[in-house]
Length: 314
Image (tube, rainbow, N blue to C red; front, side, top):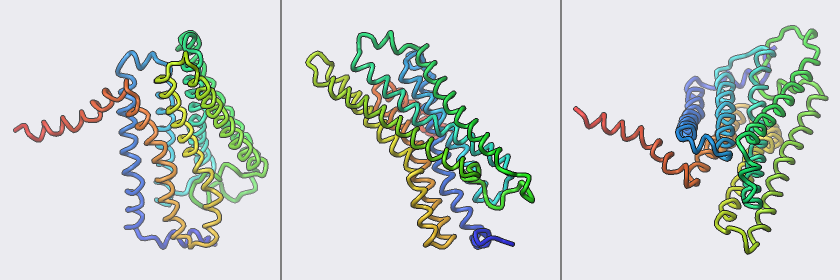
């Protein structure tokens, strides 16, 4: 028996599906290209490779880029009506979850680094070393990996042997790894803990920097820059949380919208809520940093200059 969603999806014209693919694919490709340039910029100079906050930014950039690539692969498969098996879908989704979890945890670590820089300036170089930064990054990835491992164990508890086939009846989605009530409960609790921990960490660092900034002995300029950076981290965290906040809204709209219109709306939300926040955050961070900005702008404009020279030359 064909499901209503499958019938509705078949109503979409080939032209519309191509347009939707371009609508998401073009921004994703552009943002990934910008991320590659920023990553090249961060690896181009020794000072960037040996400064903790830039190393943390590199880690965030790599995780976000991997997340966008996996999300785009899942999107293209869904838009092309590619039906996967549970193991293949699960592998893609857990990899997306792994890189997704790096985002809030790295923001929390970056906030702590700015807190130490302002509140303990004399001890900053001894506390925030390359060794401690590497340990923090390793801890972030290890924590995220443990979460993925737990999700895989919970997914394996589902009685797959009772199914007629391991092939999914719909396109691959995040919900395909949340197959049991225990997994659903774990998913909710973990997300609440993750973003509450990151949020409290950033807010705590923000309050500490504000208090320290009122001190006479504090470098006001440094404190002001750290304050703006922490505010940016908070905005990034809220934007990172927005896809999870949008899920209940999407479920409510699904009840009152036709499937075709719902799919169109989800395409727009995918670009606005998932792609743009992850892609634009590193660019904003790089452009506002006085050390990175000149090198980054030079690298961003390099391609345009080469193209212009090629066009002028006979």
